[in-house]
Image (cartoon, rainbow over the protein chains, first blue to last red):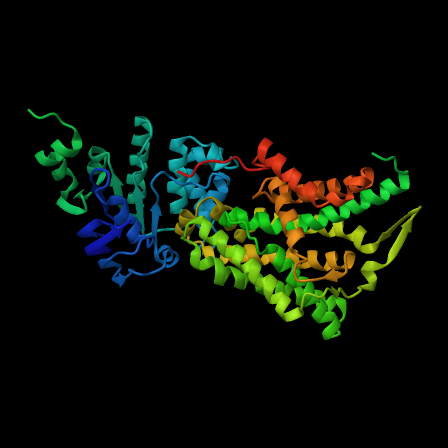
Length: 235
Length: 300
């Protein structure tokens, strides 16, 4: 569905992504794990058209999307749940959902109900300003907002960042649920353990290069991955 | 401090409300642009000045009736505002904020000098719109229709602007863009269109303000927009810049303060223009976010 070939991106004068190749098959969950500064966010931001790459190819459903404006990329069916949630604090929960469907021409009432089904908490807080929500609720809103665009591919940038462990579990459950309903997911996480457990396939990014790749569960067993990202103590 | 008769007081009260609502109309333009771009559009007062000239040309040179002229003036002023944004501000969207502000000052000087070059510095008379300048008497108070109508028009337009920002799709996009451009783009919002809309609304209100202003002070010269521009900026700061209702409130307070100074302390009439700056200094010292100002929250 999404194919990236030899992507290089400069960010603020330094090369953040140094030629990565990856592929996201339809209906799968693919995760990109790696430490801070590995180039994960830059990769997602480049796919979303927020950053222009130096070289490389990005194709979505067979179509080249490099150089395309973010609006058109969203219209093609790619959405990004940005790092730090970035809900519109001055808008109500309902307005945040409505604005997620900004490009939708049809009636969006059913989509709103679907998001409320997925996140009953949001329904209760429908008229509250998004800025008054807790971190976990804001993350739910950010995901719900992205779903309103009816994406084919949803990219999530560190959805578990800064959330309480129980909420993190909720978020990963929801990621699985969204995927089951047919949406492809590209997930970035520092929480490698959780991410690899839900992912069909994973890539390990280190300072702008892909160091390793493999099935989620295989990477989870890999000694090098364990040492570097899963925090298991050496024997 | 002098004692004034009840009639004089009422007369001046009406004047204060009227001039205050004029300030309010122009202040909305400052506050909306600031809300989205975090830019103080220093050219706004000069857009107002150009609108007054457009009215003179439409009515005097082309002899069009006032109601046709007003529509033409609004259209041309809106066009001017949108072009200024496209040419002078849009290319600097990602530049440091100081650059775009300097660009705004540049546009201001450009318009003032362009007007001097094209129309000369000799003041031109604003065409008389008989309907607006007609005097009516209420008891012993004599007022022009313009004085009575200005606050009504301002309140109606405030409601229209609030309706657009709070109840329409583009208004929602404006509010979203005002906090986070990038995330707004991720929603599929066309930021350029949102910003253009802001300039359309602000310039349109400035055009209406210019027509009402001209009917009150019918002498138009290339620097006529400077002082109202500064005062309306101060009104916007007083009300809490970025907040539309605040801008209107600030305009009313400023207009009233000015007129009351002249009424009760006629010896200080020469300081009429200074009071705005005194208010500015006090606001910046005591409550920099203004009366209804948004809380400053850091973007994450």
